[in-house]
Image 1 (cartoon, rainbow, N blue to C red):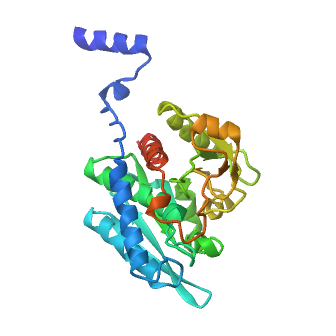
Image 2 (image 1 turned 135 degrees about the vertical axis):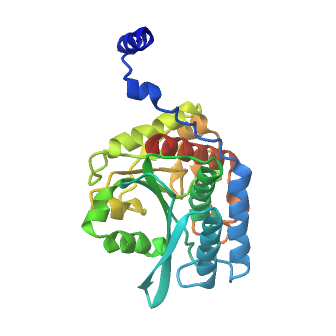
Image 3 (image 1 turned 90 degrees about the vertical axis):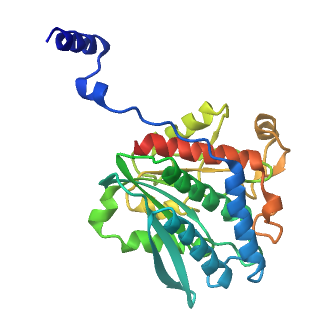
Length: 311
């Protein structure tokens, strides 16, 4: 009894409840091995090489990419499904993957578009985001992560044609299922060769309440890796838009596209002033168009943020 009283007194002093004291410590997010992410990118490049040089909607390279991602997730024990839709006279696909466990009424979701444009293999845009969240998913399983919230991943089709796949997914959800998704994080171009470190602005017009908290988590994760990030207004140009329109808090990270990179940004992040990605939507968007350092840091930020959110 004296021991119990002493424990209770100690907990009162520290402001910790008995339930908190008994709760297991949350495991830290693993360091994501960039070589694994690059191996996924090499597979996307190989798929494009074997299928006319691209992985675009309605082309065989896209379906091969879908099948390969689904196969990796199935082998890791995820519950997966392929959602089909029609656009422009062609069938498109999304892969949805659910990690086992967690509160099904409290879902953390991550997504990235898997399609390229017809001009090239789309390794930075957006093999990089797709490969990064794939490796984060595989590491969740490999490390035995046990989230309290449910974690879901989505790889979207036909983003390049107007965010078609993500819109089809959100539109297909019953209202009750939309309310279960408490946050959506989007990763579109995370390996740009002349790199940047951007976080989606949670105060951008039309972005739902709760998004600022997600933005701040991502900013804090970059800070923990010694990186000062900048905010960017995405203006509904990526797959978070459908989730935001449904009232779901959103954010994400971005390494830069065809926008000009300022001298100040080059001084802060390295590289040179000019375009972040000179191969944006071009045939030269290959595995040679990836900066391994920025790819690595974005992947680590994704893992750190998801571990924190879901646990």
